[in-house]
Length: 276
Image (cartoon, rainbow, N blue to C red; front, side, top):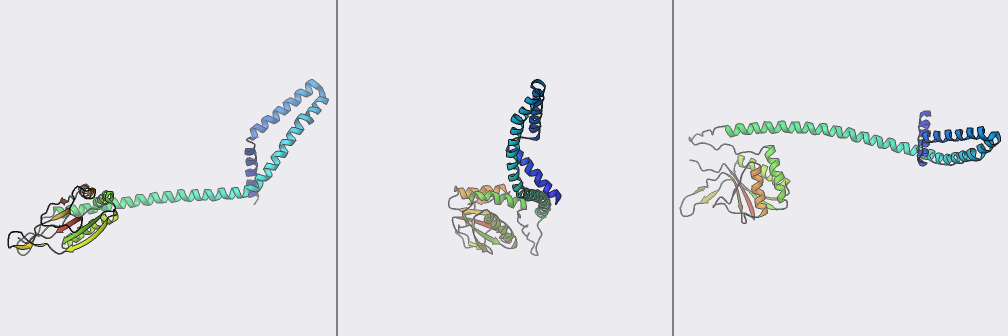
């Protein structure tokens, strides 16, 4: 308790001096000047003049100054407890913010390290899949290699780039089996996260009769096909550049058999090749 009131007194004392824009050093210089003046008065004009000077010029002046300071000190003494409490609360908040910032930075570094590790692992798996030779089925024909799944880094690049077309709409048509569904799901997520309106269609296989003949069956298409009425529109160009940036190029209006299912349609076609 004694320490608390000591801090209150010290806070009030220093704040009262600040009110007069002064300090103990200036007060000490003023006292020395008064003493020097009194000594000179005593030496050169005698004791009577010294006493008169002491009362008239020093006692009254210093008394008035002390009286004015006392009023300010009482005011600051009353305010000091609330100011000390507010300062303590602010210091606690600042300390908590610094501690939280340190913890957040440490957590962010940990997450980035985990993310980098995950990306390296995924990219390693993808390289293995891409480098794996196609296997043969019972009929002797080669099965299709797994489609190029987006790595975490590629998906982030795709999403961020697609944000330039936020608010546009696209229809995504998935053609094929499990592999096509996996790639299509990644692409759908990227468009949605980028703020696009996405409509979904799923087709097991493309069964189209070839014009001018009697042959029908699955059309031999494989990859990403972007079908758009206006190939020069900003939305279409955003899609093309976004996929190029993520290292998964799309074929713009590159098929004569695929039809648009809206202003902009993206076909995700994997596993739709006819058997050889």
